[in-house]
Picture 1 (tube, rainbow, N blue to C red):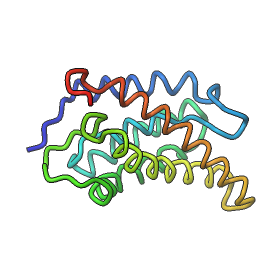
Picture 2 (cartoon, helix red, strand yellow):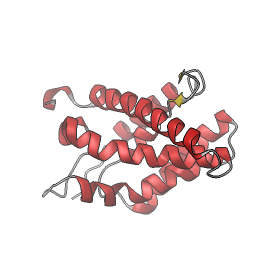
Picture 3 (cartoon, rainbow, N blue to C red):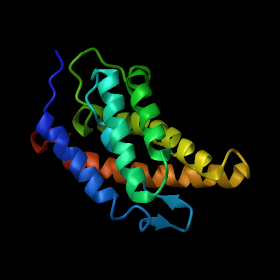
Length: 171
């Protein structure tokens, strides 16, 4: 049975958005790495959550970021796709036997986090930057921007996931 702690999920959303929105375009490294770490909230939604609920939450999360960054639907579309494929990707990458999986640092561990988080963050950033770029023009620059931004965002999401994990069960 899926157990969801709704107050904890709301708090996590609030933390990710409060950290993301004021620093959206201020956390840029070398003019090519952007930190879109709000996607971590979508990636840590409970495994087995109804896909329609997950996609609705992802839409409103992405829309909130779109409103504050003046990007018409780019973040919302990227987060909807991530919410759609995250459970499928988890099934492929992580070997699990329990149906009551909590997607957190405790359950994934360091290597599981890399296998689960980084590819989805990379896809999220590829969607954002290819739409922003207007297609796949200047593919080399686009790939560098996506790669460095995904690495940067992954490090932030990885650190935040470690910080919000329950302290009693940390590895």
